[in-house]
Amino acid sequence: DWFNIKERGRPMGFFNAASTIGVAVSPPILAAMMLVMGWRGMFITIGVLGIFLAIGWYMLYRNREHVELTAVEQAYLNAGSVNA
Figure (cartoon, rainbow, N blue to C red):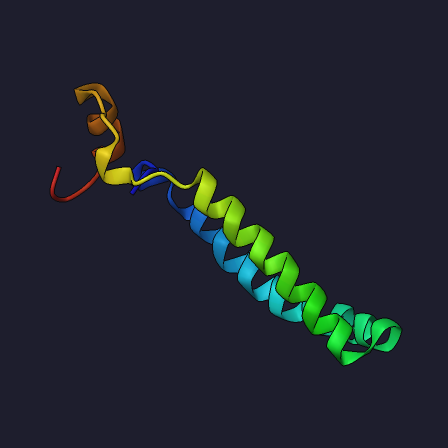
């Protein structure tokens, strides 16, 4: 909801492409990690990385319901919307 209706295609495309690319790229990377450090080492490394990413997300994420938008900003975001 933070992109203009007419400009949402590109961010949505990046999001969908990133999830598909991640599924394609991660198996060879994880297999290489497993060969170097064993399956336990790979799981521990990925788990620690996930914990750090979760902590970073928790620290940076803001509840969007409490963001104050001016009327001009709201009009820009809703431009081209059926319910605008």
